[in-house]
Image 1 (cartoon, one colour):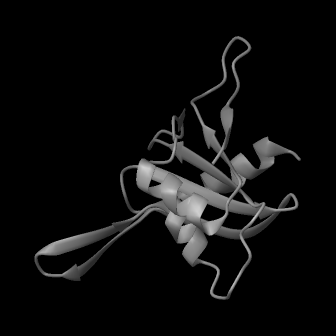
Image 2 (cartoon, rainbow, N blue to C red):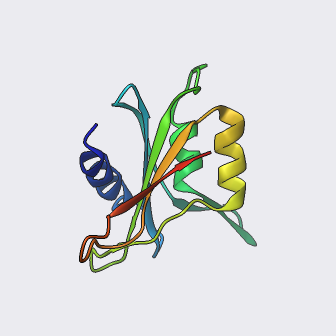
Length: 124
């Protein structure tokens, strides 16, 4: 599986975000994307805003019953200048991904340098 390719897809998705923090996510099954999401900010009430993390948007993007077991989620973050940044899922997203049955998460850890990787693979 070409992980860098899916990181690129997540980075492109992150550009759709209107938030200053640009995060994209891709859900994979058998090495193929089945859903793409990005973090979203919106207004639902005059006194409040809502915010949805890219991981959850990716899960919610599947508008049908899906067996998530054995899937992998790729999450990537970049700043306004296009620099890749650290993007480990928050605790709430980790719990949700685990409850859905997502098996692995791959997230960016920053730009690679001197033998370091662009990403980290973690089992949920």
